[in-house]
Length: 236
Image (cartoon, rainbow, N blue to C red; front, side):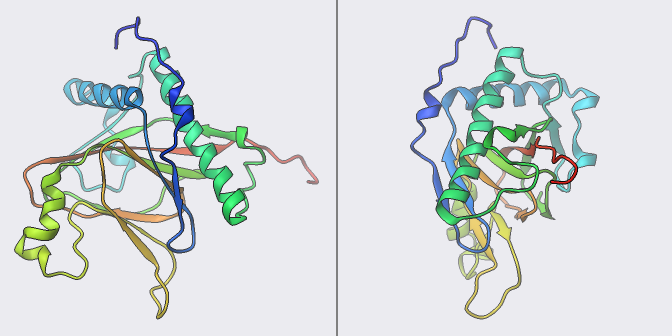
């Protein structure tokens, strides 16, 4: 990215944040800024083109996906500062809303919202037809997924394809977040349809998976984790 580009702080006025609780934990959905989208997308394409060995992130991930790259030594200083600032803002907003709206406690390593830090590296998944991400969790306190590309063709499968349209749970290309047991009068999962420029934030321990699709397109997403930096003193 050109060094002369200057980034604004307009995203701090983000009014797209939506917090919902369809089961135990809270899920936050919002829209990222155009600037963040451009940084993540342009560098994702560079990662794919360069294919540096140190960016191959597959052995660290559960995904049955051929192309998963870590943003290792990829961003310029200015770009990383922009990425870090906006993503940490979203993570702190999640923590604040979970506490203020639902009375949820923060983990022991997050005493103040400023204790929330972005863990390195971020990574990008180029998911193609028949690929999937099995049930898994992440490390850290919070995790997020950002959608850079979510083709309409995939969503159409859920209403058109013979294998999906008669199902009571069409899932092509969707992410499912699961918590607890499946019991009467209770829901233990939520399905989410990806949309470009949307971010989902949730506890890192929350199990989730991504279903395969059949269309000859790509679903591109970026994920990362957040950690707490607060250290308890002996005796606390």
